[in-house]
Length: 201
Image (cartoon, rainbow, N blue to C red; front, side, top):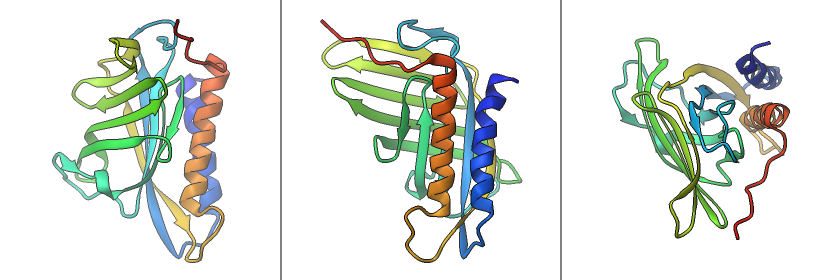
């Protein structure tokens, strides 16, 4: 099975669990599947890794958007850079601009995420114009580890995710995004093993 399908299938299975609920209202999930990095430092990031993500919105994106800032409309998100799995509780979505076609499908984008995992600062970026890139900067030095490509990935969605009107331990979108995170985690561990940033002298 293609490695990207191995990533997508757990995500869709997680979404299937959420579909089983009867929705009082719904959230819309967009999934990004990136291409493998073509350049990588080889220590932390390799050319078998990629950037994959999921973004949840209260309402679907509109049709024929042109470079619209939707950062504040994102409810939750999860992202894997191939080495680490990040979510909205661990990092900051700096910006997310999108363009859509006549059916509301994302066909242009630029998002940037920043995360701190002491003593590293991670910058994760994806753009329809320039591809994906991740830099892990050791504070006070030049980028220590990186992976990038110039071949943007593809988007799927929106997937309608059921949510409940009363407080629950996990809402439909939480379950779906949590399942997506587990899919990302399983995908990363299966192909790359459990990795840690090398210690600095």
